[in-house]
Length: 167
Image 1: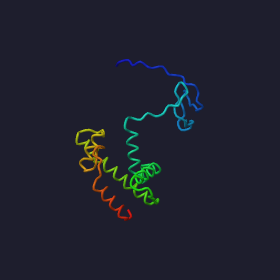
Image 2: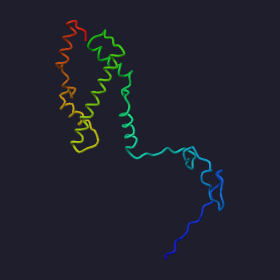
Image 3: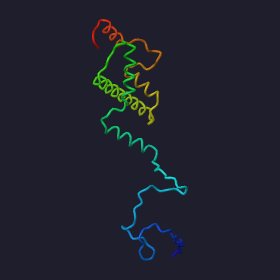
Image 4: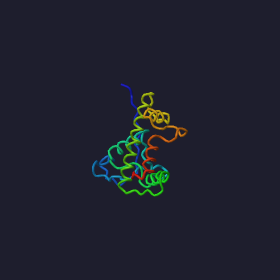
């Protein structure tokens, strides 16, 4: 049988844990360290996760929640800014803003799902701007700023406003 070299036993400084015979620690009665491991410089190290682990955790958390993702205040500012372009004296109730925000988030989620399907069709996992443009073109939405002329929806909305009808 081959000889196996034995490694030397290191003597550790006492940590306040009770020791049994032969210098062995007694299991179950020792002090539990509650802080994270310190490096030699005394700075706490944070746990390193593998790439994508935190992203998957965030995805699971957002899918499980029912709250809105877009912050409310910037969304309200955007809605008011867009409304100012149509008419200057629009007023919105809280319920109206909540409904608009819910619809906007639903639309964004649908567009991103379609764009992700385009990325998978191209045998990629990474979502790219060209996937979003393709998804918008397939859906029939405006995708280029130079094509931003008035649409049928804009014309109908303008007719309703000029006619004195409430929107």
